[in-house]
Amino acid sequence: MALTPISIQSEYLFRFLQSQYDYINSNPRGTGIPHVDPKIFWKIKLPIAPYNEQRRIVAKLEKLLAKVDNCKERLKKIPTLLKRFRQSVIAAACSGDLTADWRKKRSVNHHWQRAKLKDAADQIQIGPFGSLLHKSDYVDNKISVINPTHIKNGEIIPAKNITINALKKSELKRYVLQEGDVVVARRGEMGRCAVVRNGQDGWVCGTGSLFVRPGSEILSDYLQILISSPIVIKNLERDSVGSTMTNLNQKIFSNIEIDLPTIQEQKELIQRVRELFKIADQIEARYHKAKAHVEKLTQSILAKAFRGELVPQDPSDPPASELLKQIKAEKEKQQAELKSKKNPKQRAKRKKRK
Image (tube, rainbow, N blue to C red; front, side, top):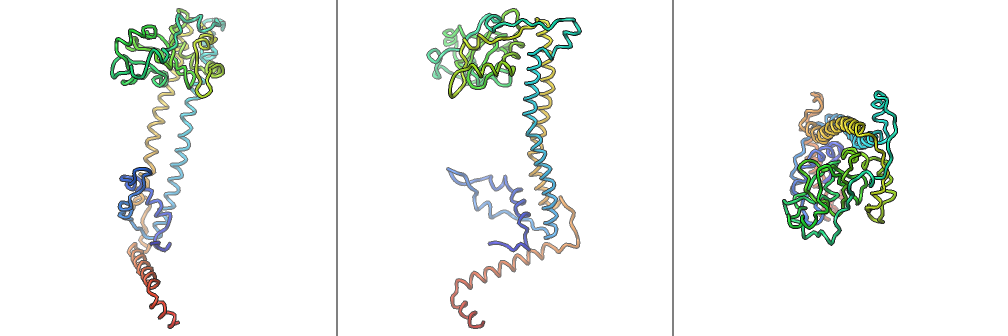
């Protein structure tokens, strides 16, 4: 039954239902598309404030929630900005701009050796093909197999259910990783790579990956920076094959051209990239904390509004009891009208009276 606008302001009712979102959706019905359980919905108790106070609550909510929305929009931009910042750091490292002051201080000329990756690596090995490693070979909690999905944000994060036993590992000894190797995803998003760290050696390169074993003229961490740099990613995307999913083969990857500074400058580059990435990581951590806080703000503000704590009460406002009387009167009036419409004799009597 609809109430007159005099009793309950529609925006007030809308905001109240927003405040009950979690409760309304706490026990949905339906096996296909979940929908609201009417029993839950119709049992919600609506706190009725005086009409003028309803207007003040709505006005205050509009101001505060607009600020919250604006804050959310600003926060949305931070991940993109951080991604661009990290890409800029890597690009500056690979171009030599990041260590320009370091070279100037030491009177070192910016003359880096240019080489193909295959000439700077001791080994480049593509992962085993499907005939060597099947899904049925996987067991739980044994020797980790590293596929592209396990390379996340420059680190190797193995899965407990994508592992093989020692016997299968012995059959795949050509693909066993050593500390210092760089594992690279050769499918999907180009540039995903990670260095094999202490405690990770002995794991196995998976079907969708390849690995590079650096030579003496290139450090593992510098190689990771190179492979994840915008220029290398662009070249890999240009040369990769596959219509539905980009795919690197060993020939394409081996012929990547890279610039090699001295080992000393590589160490300086690695250190500077880590320091700048650490700052980005700190900002990202603060972003996630702020995002979680802002996500809770809307419901917190709404809850405060309907506890009567958001706006001051005005003693001159007509009491809410008057609204309840109006609602009751309106309800009785509508019920009477509905009853009379169902009773043709009463309609006929009314016509005679007129």
